[in-house]
Image (cartoon, rainbow, N blue to C red; front, side, top):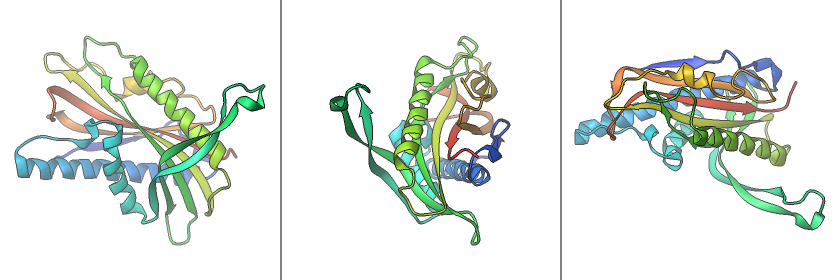
Length: 246
């Protein structure tokens, strides 16, 4: 198995500002740890069988579902994917005729109890995937596409919170956005920027506008080889967490 390090950045996560904040933080920490463990096991087994390097967390959003599902299933047997729900589509807020219900799905739902005597919490999870260039020839600021993807993720969990409230059994609801972001640089360049540069450049990471931010980073001592002709320095998962305010 490849040796790697995980680091949790919870500096700006205010657990006591939201309901179930401490449980949500623990859930994110465990979920992301298992996600990276399963990616590492996949990489090791794939290399043993084929002699080739492959890391699932480098693939697109939809291809992350299998590793996340495997991680969630290790935490609880009560989980489903692609949960449908409808929300009000405000084409014109001043006209009732232009308001209609639109169908969408949420990537994962699970009911998780951290301990036998603990609360059973519904987690509604949306997933996104982007890349961050760490090259000396690049800019430390994330691309507009990465920022847009993160903004969409934020809007998705906010709309899910609005439409799914009080609709599920259990002791409470937490809405969580998972943004998986590998940091890379081309083979002919050196890495200048780190996961800290990424987080420092993310709007609102240091602020609290009703959404709690947290992250987990996967790192290997050396640049790790992959299925593509790039060097990868780290993979950071940014978590956006909301529930009821206290």
